[in-house]
Length: 420
Image (cartoon, rainbow, N blue to C red; front, top):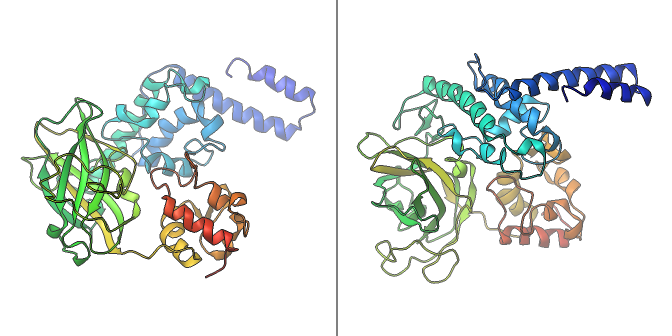
């Protein structure tokens, strides 16, 4: 673009573009020239910013606008390269894409080099993306550290916050701390189970008495663990869980550890329902292998299908788990009240509200929701079609709807979507 924009402007002039339009194009193209020239140097970007958004603007946002805006600045989610830097920053920081603990493990870095869409901007740019995130992360980590301590200290009113930020709400329910199993497999298809008794939560909750929380862990690389498939078995009644956090530390350190920002806090925004699933015979001592996914013998459904990457601290690390909130589940039914409580309010309105209509849609209330509904016809209703199928576009991130949830939406729409 840096060598061709003058000829491009001549072409625009020949088809009668207005003077004002030309001025706008010139300004945009000059800005793009500067951005492209900056990243053509392939050096680590510098920033003097003292805020997260300021560092983002100086570093990764420049990279994104230069290489990703054609898709992720227009209509392709995630929209981290849009014109509005505040909106772009919220998407880039609050999802799994930028790993401030280990920038090389960021999804942005992988996608900048894997040619996933066949365009020049997403091929051969991993090193520039990593350099940009590294510079950005240094400021984010410094800001978080100035606001709180390490190893479970209070970080701006959260539990388990540290130099990377993150953490659970101050009222969160926290498990005991468990050492990671010895000799974790480095075979990327093999996982080891870790299990916590929910009788030992602080503060205690009668809703999960007798139940256990399980996750699966492996040694993903020399510097990282991968954890996946959080599950709960042994409940006496279904519960709704808001926010699942995993804190890591060297086992010899005091406190509960800290939560890794980025790929290590994927479950922190979950609002999920844990169903009643019986404990297997001999549990938690057996079976020793992780429970398979499902509802049969020695099985349990996962609360989140996305895995997380957590940095290794030492030769012997420990994990602690926290839940922001545990409450009695609202029964899922094909009514607007139930769909609103279980789905719209928990998984949709953070991006689609009356004051923030991403894509032009809001699910803040019944009237707004009807804009994406064709009464009696789920197949013609965006609320249903965008959330179902093998690769649904909504919700973004890890909060995909279950078959029971999409089934409730389908039935409600088929019944003419009453305000019930």
